[in-house]
Image (cartoon, rainbow, N blue to C red; front, side, top):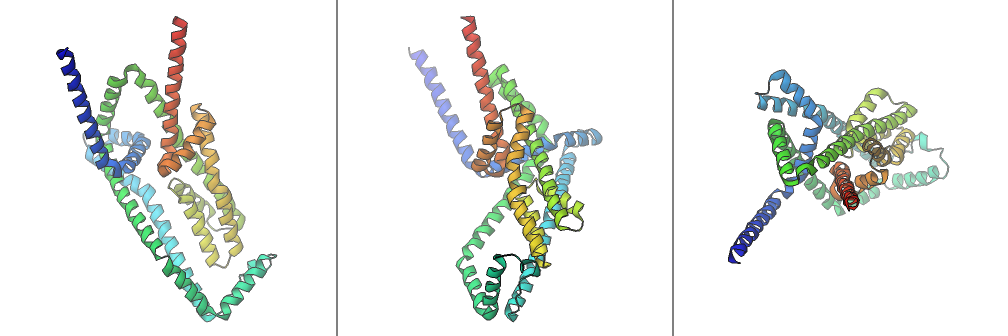
Length: 356
């Protein structure tokens, strides 16, 4: 009796120690989970390109190969985003200075493009007249409102600094994933096979298929969104429509990238006294371009993976709600794994019934 009790107590103690260390490890790493997950997803997406670089330069130069991939990633996705932000900041600054100067002189005028819209033009004309009558009072009201909401600026600055820190952690993780990815993949497969045996293969296959579908779904959605945005650019007669549409396509891969694009264009048109064109692009973007991703992406993924559209839609929407932008990938993958477990359990129960 004692011989049976001692090993069981020993196993319980080992399990408790393991659980404590898992909890402590989670407490240490919980702030870095999302950057690491993003690094894993990006490494998975770009692994074929990294394999090509390895073949060309040699597998022994792992640090150089990983550095080249990191620089390529930052160049392709980082520079366009920084250029657009710089342009947006510059246009917003010019617009603010012009608006401030016009307000101080009391010469604010309704754009000609808005003067002939029924009802709306009358309301706006009265508002412009009130502002021109006492521009200093209007400026004081704006300053009072800004002072009352200064805490928003601190929140935004804190959030921005946190995102920059996450980005730095993601890039560091991405470098080491490129460098040690082959070793990590072999070790992960070995551990899963030891834990689950042959059952690990369908799960790994489901994860790979769903991740591929979601990633390609994001690319397909970015293409459709840029195409829809491009139609509005053509409709209002923007110059360099093809280039702007291409930039919109690149930004569609980034969280809030598409709204930043059409919002910046609307702001620029507004500064050029083209209020109607700015309104068309902004309303079309908010009502058509941005919501389209919630329909196109789940539909594309469900067709690619043969998983029911409803499961993918709940996975995408629920994933975004629970985990943020990374939930676009995590949500469908989690539900796909659950579905794979359901199917395996159903097949096993059927097999058991048939054997009886």
